[in-house]
Image 1: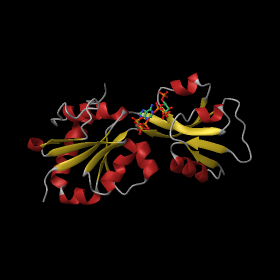
Image 2 (image 1 turned 135 degrees about the vertical axis):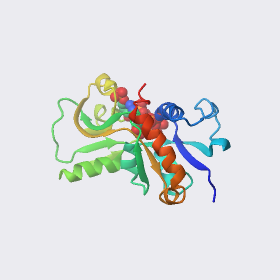
Image 3 (image 1 turned 90 degrees about the vertical axis):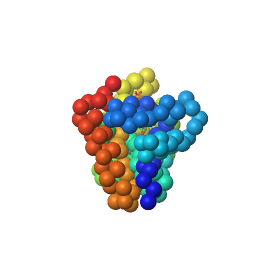
Image 4 (image 1 turned 45 degrees about the vertical axis):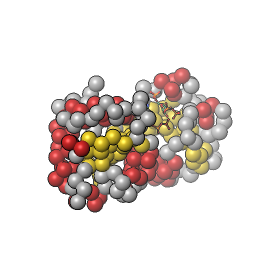
Length: 214
Ligand SMILES: Nc1ncnc2c1ncn2[C@@H]1O[C@H](COP(=O)(O)OP(=O)(O)OP(=O)(O)O)[C@@H](O)[C@H]1O
Ligand SMILES: O=P(O)(O)OC[C@H]1O[C@H](OP(=O)(O)OP(=O)(O)O)[C@H](O)[C@@H]1O
């Protein structure tokens, strides 16, 4: 059996915090694993760890298919992608929320349109409330949609609230709060339980001690 643990790391916002947390938990992550580098795979044989860098939305896919044993990913992505993976630990990093937002003078319309990068989350949210909406999937700059008349409302990430404020939008409802999670492939979790449990426990201790808060 291959005893190496392969970990899918998300590029972008979560990356630095995740690396910081792992180093605090005692895992020797080399400087080579950096967003400044173009290298996508970094192996640390002496620690039995191999890391690769992926787009955040793709992390659960790599983990579900077993190309990574573990992954670090935002709860928003888990809720959107609905991949068959284990969620092992709340890492309490990269906090934000998913909210419904719109113009302050927004009025309900007969066939409301909702723009979002999270079509499943949006669809589920409005369906559970018995509200019929047309969900329009966009890839970014979601706040544009109500400003230019593409949609009545948006479902998007809010962190500081600055993007909403600078575009004259208001947060109407919070759908859920979000932090990053450690996830595992189901069969890896059975086959490599000892290694995965040890890594999860070290990270959990560090998280409990507030080690990740910077
Ligand atoms: N202000 C924020 N905006 C977006 N994501 C945030 C924010 N704060 C924390 N996050 C977390 O970071 C993750 C997104 O990271 P990032 O923006 O780097 O990736 P991305 O959405 O794939 O970006 P892009 O599509 O612009 O490359 C989200 O899944 C979420 O869990
Ligand atoms: O509340 P804030 O702190 O302003 O953060 C929220 C904004 O950040 C994200 O956008 P991102 O920067 O990823 O750009 P994007 O529009 O291209 O997705 C998100 O989609 C919001 O637009």
